[in-house]
Length: 284
Image (cartoon, rainbow, N blue to C red; front, side, top):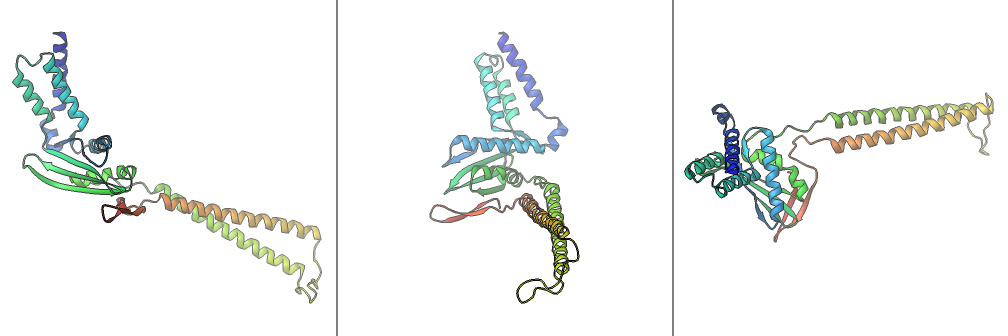
């Protein structure tokens, strides 16, 4: 008896928390998401992707989302109430409460299919009041990890909600600027070193080498001075090369991290064999 009372109280609290106010209902329509259909993939992979879609849409806050695990929890609680006899007095009231909790204006159906060596995610938004499909979205990727990155865009397209904000460009632009400045400074240091080396050569051999390859002129300064200058020039050349290599690396990393203008477009696209045909796999 105590167990029935406790479950009844928990059920009431859950119903109160799950039932939105009139203002919330107008702003956030309820959306129910079931486990996706698995086609040539394991049910666990399809279920994990449906949870990812539910988590993303719930985080956006545009819908009151009931994911697959939420529905299972509600059904399990209803089953427990029936087992302990909490609904014996008024079973119709329990059924009505359950229907009120699970009912949703929109339902999101989906499927995860393997097409050759690629994976395809298909989403379909259904208006339960009109009993018709509202919008659809389909994404193709070469792996489940790449397909999971496309979940925000597929879910946004299927539900007609705004796309996720584009990734920040601060870090890649900073790396590009720093790499460009480093490349420029390395080039300037190298040009100055070459210019200084040319001046020293002219000073060491003002008339140029003779027929025998020897310098016809004479040194204007001590030999130790020119040795020191040559060592300094060698260090400056090494510094110039180091700066240019470092700048090139920074530019390369910046270009690699730089997101495309359209965040839905990716650079990695490959040709994947399908069932008697070929398809382009990637985030596009």
